[in-house]
Length: 504
Image (cartoon, rainbow, N blue to C red; front, side, top):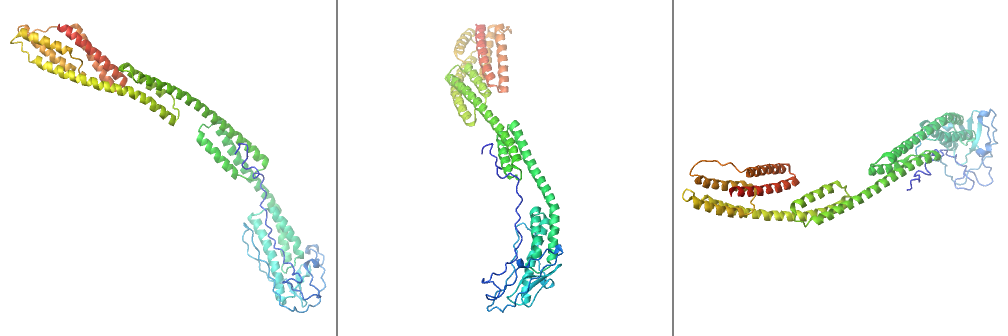
């Protein structure tokens, strides 16, 4: 639906009052001569006067009603004629329940010997019809039922007016019609009282009409207020909301609620709809701009991540383990700083980036395994030499012990790195052997030679490097751990060289 298409267009105008279904049950028409329901004698017999023929004046005028000339006696019909029945009243939906009126027509009329039916009113007696189809009692009952139908209709209109279930203006019009028709109605009953009730209803309907109009105006104002509130809510959404999904759903719900609000004049309704449509368009433009910017940002993020993937792929085959490890960690930090590109696209890019890093770190892990295996083998070789050195006995042959130890030390120094965890232990064992041989050379004189300043300095540097490594491992910082390991290895190499120089 276009934002300018009012969903209530054509149904939002001032709703016309609910049409009053005519409750009047027209008095039964006189049977037409020749019809199956005819109650007149054979052709040639004068017909009974109809209510139209009576031409009686309104009882309120005070003029006496002319009495029609009684018809000539009619012969008994040659064939049985069915007795007419009064029509049943069918209430309109929404009409308050009203009990059917059943009166006693004998109190208000009579049927003379010729079959003429009369009704008594305040202005006197007047003829209302002719009955030729049976006894006088049946004819009187027939015209009494006609009165009952009229009385029931008046009662229905009174109930509707009291219950406020209809348009008072239409009820007034119907009551006026009834009041005007009752003085000449072809019925037997309290027509004067019924006419008075109809006239009273006309007066009551006039005051009810004003109330009805006020209620209708209040209802229209309430409906306008509802749409004004919805339009204001839409305007706030259009100007401020950034909850795009929830706000869009709310605007759709407002449209559906808008369709249910009726009874507003077209001009007011179109003005309110224009406000809502403008607010919805403003929201749509802001949402479109937001997602356009988001798409642009995602495009930039995608390009940045693709560049990081290329850098990771270039470093993946490097064997400069320390520097490349630091570069890979830097790439990871830069990756985290780049915004996401969307769930699906970001996952694919991450897989490519991680795959390039995995190539490097897998190779480094394999290299570490090989280095560890080599250092373990070196440890075993040095332990074997230490065991051999520890068997040297300078007390029996000092010169031979010194020569043997020197050769062992040369072979010991030629062996490569050992695991850091055992390096100090192995060095301590070698120093113990050297001390034993030097002690024997001093002829048993206990003497403590001062340690070489360079060796002491290198030993302190190694101790400090070990402490830095322990702190990095405790912190779980992979970058610091790698740097500390490299620093410790360098310090240990320098210490080993210093110790060899000092021994010589």
